[in-house]
Every structure is written in structure tokens, then in C-alpha cells.
Length: 166
Image (tube, rainbow, N blue to C red; front, side, top):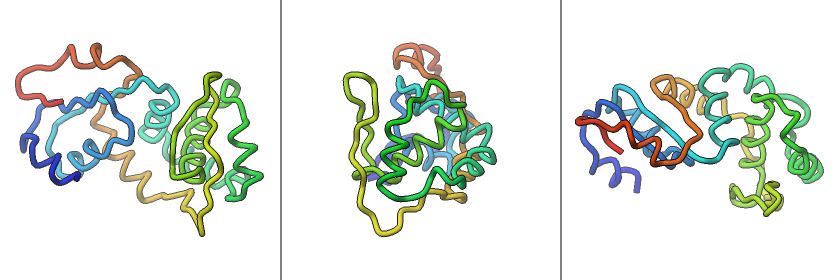
């Protein structure tokens, strides 16, 4: 699908806007193709936007954290990480936690209960890749051209000008 989506966008864009950033598949493909000068990326999920900020600005710290003993693939470690509150975690630890949970939970789902707690069950995989250094470094490089924001889409799109795309 990504090819069909990207083919409908202009070849050259001043500023690329993505107000519901999520996984960022379109952004990362457009960045790979060098089709914009800069980007404005936003989502209302503060954990997600923190993760992208850390990938952009502190990828080495993130890789180091993910290689730590807390990020092993087993059900006990997963449940401990899932139960961990995020208020006392540093931005790097919060980002590592989110990536770890996404890589090891059932089908990579992101779901919070009414109390705002991550509640996706443990995923059963052969050997999930928890530390994907090439992908994280490539994402960090792509994000260098981006302004990141945890904001409502209407705020983000208010800056669109001729030659931009959303």
C-alpha cells in the first residue's frame, strides 16, 4: 500500500505534514526518497512522541538502554515492564519501554485501559528483534528534518502553506 499512497503525493514538497503520525510509514518512505525539505510530525500520544524525540535526539542512549538486562524476551520480563509506571522514568527509559513492549506484545498492538495503563498481552514469537540498530539509526537520520509535536491535528495543520502537503 505504501507505494500507492506515496505515488499520489507531489514529487517535491516544501514541508510535509503528518498530524496523525503513528508508525510514520508514509513519512519514512517520503524521507527515504528525499521528497521534502522539512516535516512537521504530530500525534496526541505523548509516549509515542517522546519515543520519536528520543530516536531523533538521543539514539545512542536509546540503543544502550535497550541492550540492558531489563529488555530480555520472556513473559516475566514483559509483564514487569508492562506493569512499570512511566512517571519516574527518564525520556530514554520511556522510549525504550515503548519499543520493547511494541516488539514483544501480542501483534505489536498499542492499547491502554481506562486508567491509561498499557494492557496488551505478551506475544509469542520465535526470536523478536528488540534492538534494531540499523532501523533506529535510519529513523533518527530521517527525523533530523522534522519538527515533532504532541498536539491536536488542527494546531499542526494551521501552518500549511502553498507547496506543502499533508
